Each structure stands twice: as structure tokens, then as C-alpha cells.
Image 1: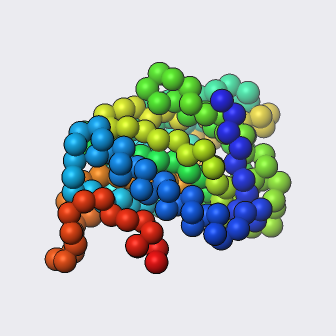
Image 2: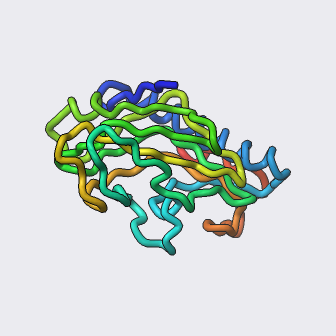
Image 3: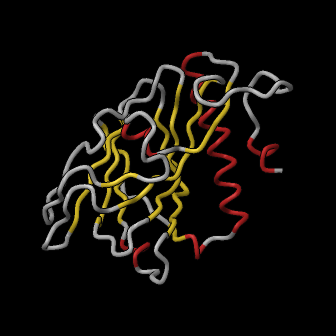
Length: 198
């Protein structure tokens, strides 16, 4: 289905905070409910969660392959599968290119098309190199599930591989110790996004 991306300039700080808090709580609950994990936390979604490339490109990713006009390149990050104790939520997209030409992203969970994300409304804002857009119907990826991203451009010249930087905005819900270690006084259970934010 088509999902609207709202440019950051069109929504309030409060709406962004509420969206992020809800996404953090829900992605931990998804990880817990699937595998009955009790000791959970969440962290920012990073570039290497898509690429699984050993820790590089943490704050951004690039189109892995060359794009040809009006041809969808499928499954651009084929190794992106959530782990047994892990869930993802995607609630936005950050444009990191000065002159972006990726026109649309489609997202699949497993073999099911979940979202079609047209990006023109972000590019139309203009004036800023890094532009964020937010999705108010976040996309959740349960444990042990393949997360597929397809890309397309409408530009006649296409796009060379590894030239346009972008970053999905989201969180990873996972067990303490998988990435983030627990502080000495941290209780067991789901980490409250509201308490962290407050």
C-alpha cells in the first residue's frame, strides 16, 4: 500500500516524540511476544542493520547497484534478516544526497509487499541537504524475517552504484547484551521510551 511520508517541516516536535516513543515500545513488545524475551532494550536503526557488513556505514547507506530509469532493482540488501531475538521498526527516511534521484522505495516483509514510499514530497522541500520524513503508520519487522527494499529512479541517466546516500529511520528491539549492555542499576523488562525521553 502507499504510505505517506510527512516532511519534518510539516509536523510538530510533539508528534515526532510521540511517534518515536510508540515505535520504541511496540518494537520491543514485538521481539518479546515472538520469543518470550523478558530483558529488552531498543536502539537506533543503523546502516549496518541493512548491510550486515561488520560495522561500517553506521549512519548511512548507499544504493548498492546501478539504477536504470523506471526499472525496479529488487532486494537491494539481500542479507537483511532480523535475528532470533530482534525486531525492526521503520518510521521514517532521511535524504542525505544533495541532488537525490531515487524516486520511490518499496518495502517487503518476507514476500509480502508492505509499503510503497514515494519520495518526491521530501525532495520538494528544498534548501537542506539532509531532509527527514516521517511515517505515521510505522513498518514492523518481526524476528527471523527478511526485510526487502526495492529502489527505482525516473531519471533518464539512471544512477551509478554506491552514489546516493540515504538512511531509513527506525529502531531495533533486541535483548540486552546483543548490542547494548545494561547499566548496573537497570531493571529487567522492557525499556520505557517515555522514561528515557523524560
